[in-house]
Image 1 (tube, helix red, strand yellow):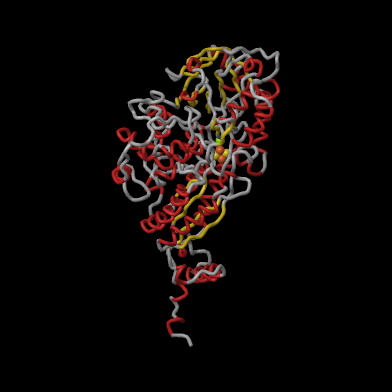
Image 2 (cartoon, protein in one colour; image 1 turned 45 degrees about the vertical axis):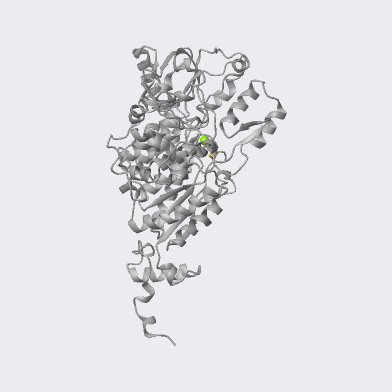
Length: 599
Ligand code: FES
Ligand code: MG
């Protein structure tokens, strides 16, 4: 027999606020909710479960993504955290992007992933969302999408991999992939060595084990106040990583209850803190692009002028490099974690930080640090240096400007291998694009010396859609074999966060843009780069530059390229027509908070 209240009209409508979101589809909200409950009950959820805050968990597992191999365990641990704290955890997929399995580049897919993330968070009835990811483009894509969706978001990174070992020496992806490959090219490693290195460079699940883009973005996410501080560095395969996942589950229920949305938490001070950390860790140049994309998703910051490329340089002048990790230093993420990780680093940086910045836990960064004191002893102060004994005095990342880069360019000065090149003038050796580079770089007849400046054109956001990490132009084989280990290199592309050398990147406007001076550089032109005075110049008469630009504007090749882009179908067409320049974040103009103005 049924009790009378079982037939009450309100009874089928008991549901959490999450389940009640967006109930407009049939013009009858009650019916919509009724249907929603019909279908979700097919999964076996009870009335009790459905009356709780719903915490979405984004699953970015893929068998093509070793950086995310631990996602299933993290989901389980995060669910435990949610459910121990009275929420209902529901996981759902978005696309998964790995650096090596994302033709043409993972950056090409970052904006797509941000759209997937944003729309799925908006579409589904979640009160808060845990975003599990880790590989380079994933964390920025998720934060970009999460800010735009503006429900409470909790990034949970997969964590760094462990280092491997070769002939008694520790090695790790991917700085050592590049160093060893360069040695192999120079003839200093044989085939057996390079094959056995191949087995050990990525020996466990997790993200690259140095201060590459993935680790940089993890540290930045913690500095923004979106993640527990230990969450940035606990190894992917550690039990600590699982406990952080459980803690994130608990935090998600609290953030849902207080409706702590990213647009309300993140202020310009949060981003100043992120940039301070970026400079102090000698982080990836890619993080500059990602942070600008994230900033420009925030309605209060986009177009405000509060955070621009210049902000990175201004902050850099006051912040020393404190972390001795590859590629700027010598060690691995596990060493950083064991030395105290972000907790130790933020305590060290405390005098420079904006302590009033809010965090996802509902207290300020200063309060977080007060509640979690850090005593340096017995931790290594070799890995996380005190302010009095930095690894590099200031400005790990430098912003350059000049007639060659009116929109700016980036150089990671701290990762230069031959510091004399940070102030250098030399003749250009120009490659039209990556194919041209591949064809000619090892030509024994190439007219190049160690003082030449290698210039690679057309690898910017539009020119080679996705702005490939081809900016670390390999040294010509004949020079490498003669013992040259570094040269000044200039391009409109990116380089891997794990790479090093004296390499100018993100030159803006990129070469394919008709007004780009990078696009009209010719062999033998003199280029000056001075990281001290922040200059990147083409030492060619302005009249000559103007003539070359005018000639180029008239060329049929330029016209054909523009037509090609207009005509291109699918995502590639959308990408090339909509992507903005590196200093704006290489985001789609229509995804920024300002929208597609001027198009
Ligand atoms: Fe995924 Fe390096 S390839 S973090
Ligand atoms: Mg990378």
